[in-house]
Length: 219
Image (cartoon, rainbow, N blue to C red; front, top):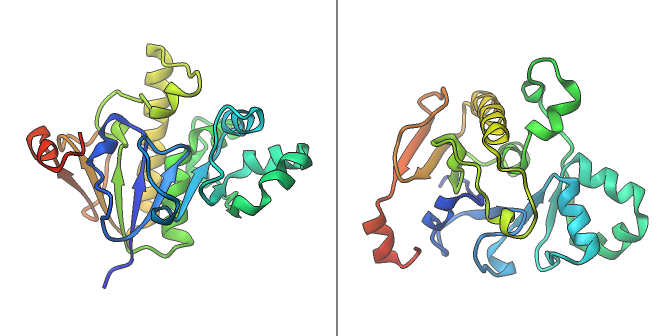
């Protein structure tokens, strides 16, 4: 039996994930719909922005265990009171940022390029030893669309120039992630199969029509 991990992103197509799907579940920041603690292995976070919102009480995520990247780790080092408040939520720190996240020689931007979804997938493959990973709600792999449910909670720059830059940088990193884990079967769930990156045969797309989704009640 395959070790399946599901990754729930925050893009428009996140509703393609059906609760009760087999496999462990990682979510990114705040999931786009209500989902209980027992259904979630952990939520993954990489940004100062999320840590700041948690510190101010603008977002509540202590219902889940946390997997945190290097910037959240730094945030907690700077604010030990915050660390003590949420230490019981921390399942682990995952500070690895791969070399392929360095784009155009900008080393300082590597952690920004390596977003929450990248970290979740890398953690699933490297730490949870998944041999099958399903991705839901990662629309920037298919369209010039970086809209996120998190945008409803936290202000984000979604101008055309920033959208183009982020989507292109993220796609480069996705190519690196998929190339690194060639022994893992990846299944990307979306409304069409026009993938905008180079990927090997171990990366497949499963399409879902709106009619199919309407029958399941997920949209």
